[in-house]
Image (cartoon, rainbow, N blue to C red):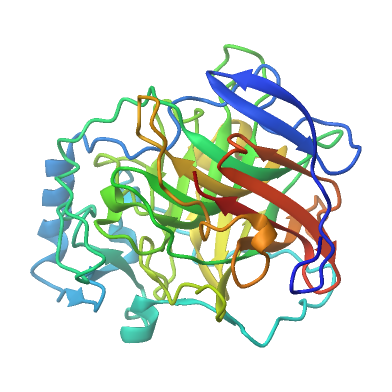
Length: 438
């Protein structure tokens, strides 16, 4: 079949059904390659995942932040209902565990592209954020931080658009014990021999899918180390993961807008892992370190794409800085900040698995099906201007150059609802359409 972009899409050939931790997966190979898509043998997909954690010790975090900022700075209220505070870089929550933080203000190097940027359709534009459009940036040496709604400072529901707002109880008392089924559809690179990646870049369009309360829907990239090269039962055994993209998650943000997020885990989602600027972690917890005064983590991305109309995209790049060992994030043209190397064990050196795709979390523990959409809610066959896509999939090789992904494996864990279809073209490079609804 062909999309309206004229891109030839390959049919997915499913090679079997494998069960991991009560989750059924259909593993689909687009090309004949060696290696195994995630989940990998001896490393089942963990059941904890990244559902928002309870904020143990929240009161001490609230007191710490309010004492240092409330009397000095003026909060800003955006049209989407967010309240934002500009705080000194060194006062961000993820550095509160350090007496004298050593902050890397910019990467020492960056990946070199393999070729010039690809062409873009006339009706495709880069998306921005509400904060960037209405405020622009914080003063030099400061970063923007959400302090309204569910945030490190005030985790309560706030006012917003009349059709967008979702009331949410305080996360300080919320407990999530995740034992239910959760759904995914994503694509993955193969594991090379030996595995060795230093990052990835992808361009994805942004949507505002329908999401049921307590569910979430997202599009993201994963930079992981599966830990398979480490000794079982050692402290280095757990899988490490860096994640970023856009998500619609009312429990975390109190509305249904697509929002930029970052996430990490150093032990396969068991005990470690935080959203954004430690939005769901206790005080004195390490995490992502932001240096950009222009990008609002957890901030709404605007505008989203619309069916049969203009498509709005974001460009994400994650790469390892050779000098510091930190993993840096670039959002569109801005260096946002980094995941410090000390957050990880197996990911301190290189990644052995990179993924891109969509994900839906379903809270139902009975036989009912969620109505939550993935991507735009349309199936991949709907094509350009209707379906969600991710394009120009590239990886950072050990020589610090970006290369187009060639061997792409596709996985859909619930193909009756969410599917994936990939292809390659001169304009879009390696890409895929994904999504759907039940």
